[in-house]
Image (cartoon, rainbow over all chains, first blue to last red; front, top):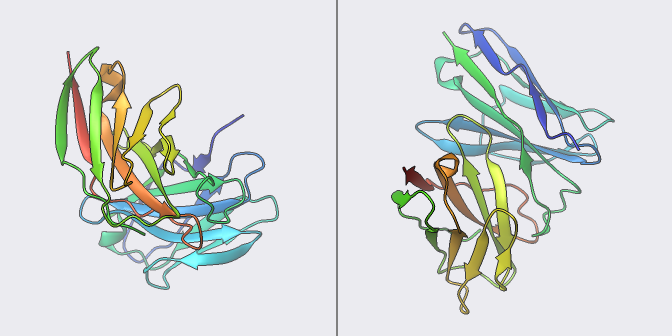
Length: 116
Length: 111
């Protein structure tokens, strides 16, 4: 079974632009979570989607948004990019996403975003 | 979710067992212990998880103390490719869906 895929793998943008990142979950997985990883803040939770609905959100400004499609694929969007948005953006999928201890999240390779 | 404490770094000789400790003294009864690792600039890789019994899979073993306040991840025969940051995460089985990552342990396997 194929793993979580993320596109693009690398991206360079300039301040003020917006960006859309894509995530395809493992086949059959219905929950998709997004995380941001920076050297200063580590790995931080952005939001989680299940059945096209955002179920959980981390402490990030409204410039960060996402959506999920009926096939469980997800996109996240960052508008008005700032230098501090440079990070590795990670997507993780899980089977049901009910928060059960056995509902393991599997991560994709990430998208490396550089904001100049 | 309960907070975890891990040593910032550890070394291990290639071919030897790597034992990575994690303290989670405030863990509650319905919280699982998860281990992930992250090789530089890649996505975290799931290793193993457990509630109270020891667990083993093809990658590692997880030993949880009887009082559940600490655990040890064991890589039985470490290789150079096991060099990574290892994260111990305590996760509620109920409402908390996200993973809360700490700083982890940088394991370096030496030739």
